[in-house]
Image 1 (cartoon, each protein chain N blue to C red):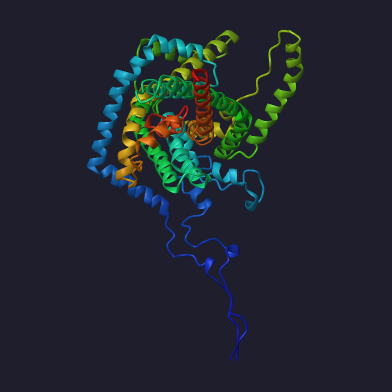
Image 2 (cartoon, rainbow over the protein chains, first blue to last red):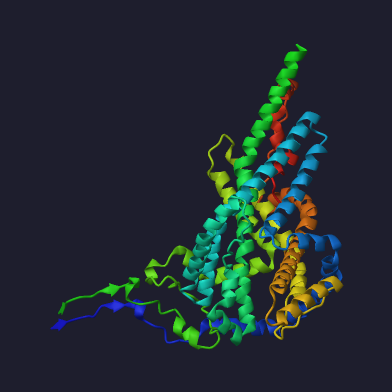
Length: 269
Length: 263
């Protein structure tokens, strides 16, 4: 007797249960959280708290004249995230410098040298962060366009974005040369990713269907901009400086102090 | 009895896993996820075959990345702290441990623990301090489903908003009006960014002080690490060290706490 057994493919075996598990899971979590008195009570209290922060703190800050002037000054700045992060780092580094200068266990010479070292490290690393950020801008814009194309489900979006960018660069080439010669010219501006998203047919369809979904999509695309600045400045301040810069800077400081001390000793002798 | 072939094909070439509850098409037609754009995008963006989809497309089309970019726009400071946590809490310890050096292993472990603890403390403090503030900014700047702003602000802010709204409603804007609208929108955007970062500047100093103060107990009680105390030295050793004590300042707490322009 000849018996033939057909190949078994376990990967093709489907389970009989075909329910939409992710939807069920979402609904379960939603119903559990909405039914729970604890969660609804907490959410209500948190909502009241944030509304009170908005009325008593945030709206007052928004009326603050220096902040209004700063906003007026930086209204066209594309580096406001970067400036904001730098401000935070200057404040924190200022604290460390102050602590160094107030340290009673160190002699005056060392305190000053260390504080200068800390200040120089901050200045150089900040300059490096700005340079890296500028270097990555063009590439990141392309990544953002790619991301927007994926969100819109428009496979031509990315290519259209690149085409108009290249066209603007081509048109600006003779204008830039004219500018160098001292002529007054108006450069052609390439459209930003967000502007292109707003003009996109898929986006308009989403907007017509649900303004909320369109807002989420816009927020996601907008989020790419702070994300780049945060990653670049975070990399420089939280990784590159402590791992690569601090040790050699300390050694230089160390060498300078030793040399200075040796000079003083030689003069005394 | 003769058996011709018994094969058990366990490769993935002959079909998807049976554990997948729904196909892409099913998901798009359920109505729940069908929002007109592809939230569960699988990455055929370039039109190439599925196998050739780049690593970047996979990241960009993933659900977590969408959530992350949304979070990044809404919570700038907390995202910054989260990135710092990844860099200081994972990448920096990995580099410290991988670096060759004359430092002994215990010192490297302590330095790594220090980086992890500072990343965790920074993230927790930043998130707790700025999240309610971010929520309040959202209420003042954003609109509800009917297009009305959730909360109204002070006079200057409301003036700015009403000017923007009236220009937006107007049809056939002149060049001057277009420029004015661009300026007003720019100012509003700058206000939003600046106000988001103010808490970071305000909590910068207390956060740094708290981080320095909390690192030793966290290292001791959470990670079980304690900085080894140096053995007592005799007078001769101390005199010898005084000549060369410039090397010791790196170990001092004020110096070890410094990380360049770090938060």
